[in-house]
Length: 354
Image (cartoon, rainbow, N blue to C red; front, side, top):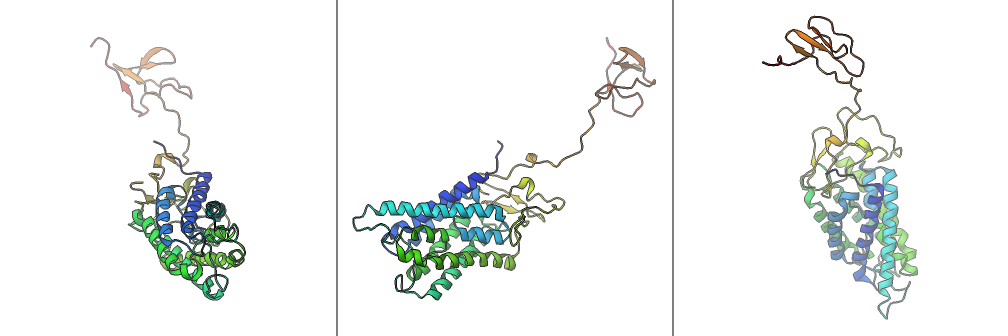
């Protein structure tokens, strides 16, 4: 069965839906307070990565997408729309939290916190500089682990979603009391928009800190551990999507399609190509080699072989037998017979009646 790589629409839908579910699961248990549910967030992320990595890579977080682009794994032309879809998913999750919060008689719309983040006297009591630095550092840790677990050189791809989910539980548990817990700017914005004045005023700290943390992790991972694949054109600090001429034998970006991480992937020799096991993820497998072929020169039409019998050769033009040693009439361009003695393989038919 032919498998078609996911389209841009598939990727954006996966990121929007996945981010909506993740932010909702993260904050739903904390309606009425500043804070999140680390365990619910971790379990949700594990399930979402297994569900959607085959389509988009399973980011659901603008900080992760920024880190991936700066690490050379995703072009900015693709990362930009994905980040927009993630923020849209975060806002939709905030709206859903508001709707369900109205079911509580004590809930006041646009005043009661929806698991938002905060700092200072109007928030958690944590100082501004500490909230900013803590959020930046834990976001960098989280994105660094994400990039490491989804590295194509790793032999533990099947367990990557589990590792990423556990890391999310850890970093949110560390920061929940101090800042309300976040490594995701889409989560911070989506919950702040519907939580009233103070969380909305303070949200800039978490937006900037998470974005800088993701960027720092993208730079650091590539500098510390190198690249696990050919650099995607238009990624890193290069914003031009025009690809450089591919090296001989390289097929990492044929057809303009970059295969995302998938469980069971093994790094190929030299070229960084990926061989896929059980499933870049989704029972989705990399297109077979036959799906792409380099342009080749147009071959000449095949010439039908002459019929030789008892030293005679059949001439299809004259519709008669001629001596096999004699030069056969020139065949037309689209078909005919090669000349006798030309060295081409012939078809020999025994005499009739033998």
